[in-house]
Amino acid sequence: MMFITDGSDLIGVTRVLEIKYMVIIRSAFRVVGAWPSKFLGDVQTTSDVVVKYIQLVLNVVCQVAGILYLRENMDKLSFFELGHSYITVLMSVVSMSRIITYCTEAYQEIFSLYVRKIHLFNVRNDSEYAMEMHTKINKLCYFLTFFIHAFMTLGILMFNLIPMYSNYISGKFNRETGAFSGVSNATMEHAVYFLWPFNDTTDPIGYAIIVVFNWYISLVCSINYCTFDLFVYHLVFHIWGHLKILIHNLETFPRPIGAINEEQNDYTEEESKQIYERLKKLVQHHNLIIDFIARISDTFGLSLFVYLCYHQVCGCILLLECSTLELSALIRYGPLTAITFQLLIQVSLVFELLGSITESLMNAVYELPWEYMEVRHRRTVHIMLRQSQVSLNTRALNMVDIGSRTMIAIIKTSLSYFVMLRTFATDD
Image 1 (tube, rainbow, N blue to C red):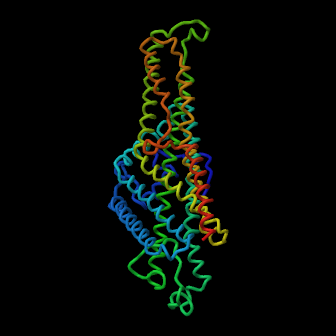
Image 2: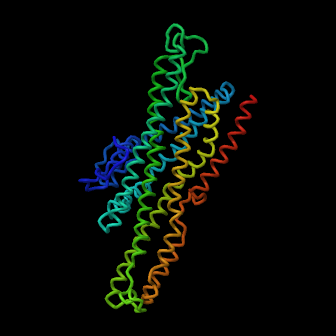
Image 3: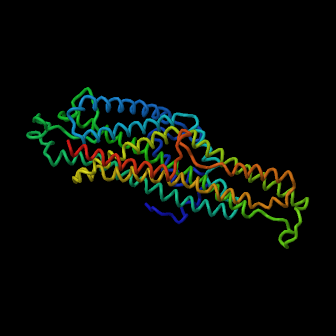
């Protein structure tokens, strides 16, 4: 599959849902019940409704079983083994916050609004610049979709295959000398540890069940992480494209014919009618953008806040796990650490796009030829100018700005805690 498109994938496409990266997102979201078929006009199957709530129940079970495992084995596990279990429990918390988001009506509505109005495919024929922005954003979303899913696949494989390989090379699959023979302390390793009411470390059937379950949970958790983030990126990229189109329309706003010859003439009566229609479209476009950004904050505020907290805690733990410099630890936790920090950097820089464009929008509105307009049109421009001064930054739970500053603060704090935890682990 091509990671970079030349735009040929759009040939013959008549609906947003037919675009290749949207097809990929739909396939992934249907696994976790996050695809809002009813709101998008798709055929809604029973599985679309049931799967979502099955995921919710499974996530609760995993959280409880993970916490119970920690409680029962707190004194038996090493410092680094505890870190592994903490990571998986924290990941299930993030996954839970996103499954809860899927169940909200606000999520269904914002997805529908994105497909019907916000996606640049809907405005591609409005102007040449709109078509240019649509093509650019399509290439960006296409590449990012394949890139993130490639990393996600790598993470799933490494996270689950390493424990299996470790069991194999240590001879634990051998019925005579391994764990299945009942040899003392020859217990099987798992990708994720839970406290189950059956034997999953020395019994072959119990071990096989948990291995399959862990593969499935890893897939679900990865989709809740990577594809969820990817969808949010797409929302931000397309709203950024709308902002660029709005700024371009403001900068190319027509001036009076007399003003071109440096004559201080106001708009004629005929021109004023056209100016009114243009201003009306600009205000409606701006209001659509502002409303959608507010919807992003309201819909994803909780999950983004939990996500930032996860990165704050889990970043230092992952660094601690990799600090052993053992090959198995690097192969198992290296991709996960890289993906975790990559996701933090990505989500921060993507949302930084919206905040960084605020000044450009203000300047574009101020440069409108308001001095040639009628008083009623000047009032419209004044209102739009005031609205454009409101920051476009997205906030998690209306408390924390999502952007580069928050990202840097989280990384710095994670490094500080990592140094402290590494010192404690070395002393032990």
